[in-house]
Image (cartoon, rainbow, N blue to C red; front, side):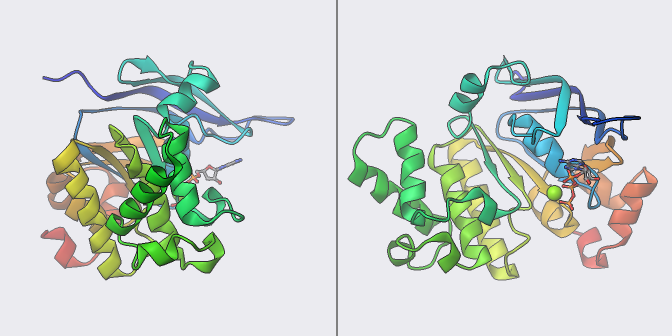
Length: 267
Ligand SMILES: Nc1ncnc2c1ncn2[C@@H]1O[C@H](COP(=O)(O)OP(=O)(O)OP(=O)(O)O)[C@@H](O)[C@H]1O
Ligand SMILES: [Mg+2]
């Protein structure tokens, strides 16, 4: 078996207490591993800690939250790494698509230039070549008329179009692992399918591993071989998705499965 791409070992996320008793932790000892090229879904109700998990893996938790435990990515311990070391990995080996695209984009910069800047930050010296590869990736990420829209500012795009700008940024540098936090929730079903297809194509062509965070079991059922169910800061299931659909063990997982259409259950 290959060495694991990612090992998360007893990850705990606490809210820093200002005074008095510390509030309940957001994650309480989350452990799982991912192999290169694997697609793993993270499913859980709103507030179960999905976004906090994604942010902690990248060292991007807000100052109010602290992570403990171990996160090993390609053999590097990420929680203990310096900011500089983490930044060097981010974007190049490890990328994220955020749940809220507007906050992740610079409002004063045209989107094509923002995608191109990602390429330049990681070593592409030729500005025109960086912009060309940015527009090309925007087109592949499903942005219609990418050459025209790449000259717009974030607020001049729809929510779904902005989501595709983030996806283009995340994929541009050919990462080994993409963490996608609700990447298709803002998209209509046609575009959603198109984005998922792009992600799968990247997996086939480049061996990209995908950690797909979603509250939508339909999206996870069509995309992920394995699913982790988070409930109340704990992993309550870590099973092949088929098994989750046919025989969920934990009550919370059963509730999530029961809440969706019968069509998905038989997928
Ligand atoms: N900065 C913070 N300070 C205090 N509590 C926080 C902070 N960020 C998140 N939380 C709490 O941590 C819990 C998990 O939040 P998180 O955003 O990870 O959930 P989620 O599973 O991504 O939910 P959703 O499906 O709504 O996106 C929530 O109860 C939230 O209120
Ligand atoms: Mg979230």
